[in-house]
Image 1: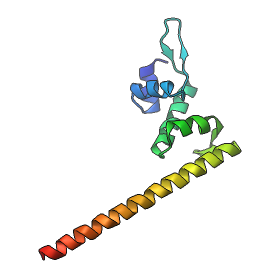
Image 2: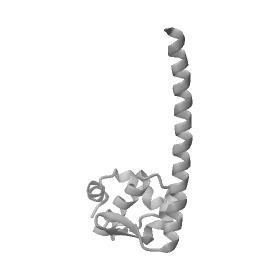
Image 3: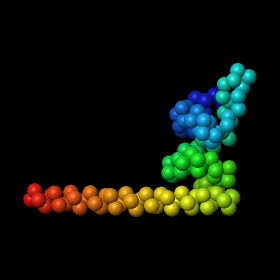
Image 4: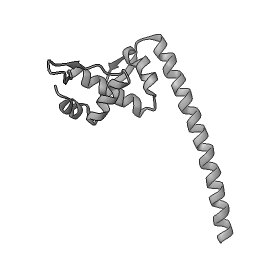
Length: 120
């Protein structure tokens, strides 16, 4: 299928499919004219990539774990031990970011509260 149809089916813009290919995450075939020729499997891979990016993973991490993921009961599940460790590392990184953002939010809340108290 052409890129526009693959993009529609995957629910992403065509430029993202090109980006995924540039990043080594997706490798669609080429037809005789040199145009990309996407398969149903390519569309599913693009959906998985989008899901992993939305979860906060980098394209470098996705490149590592993507071949080790399968779908079970409607959710992605790792099938390689190494990918579990990579995902746990990413989970710890995201949790540290959440903690830092929470501290920032709380500091700003304290400043705002002090400003409101002065205005009253």
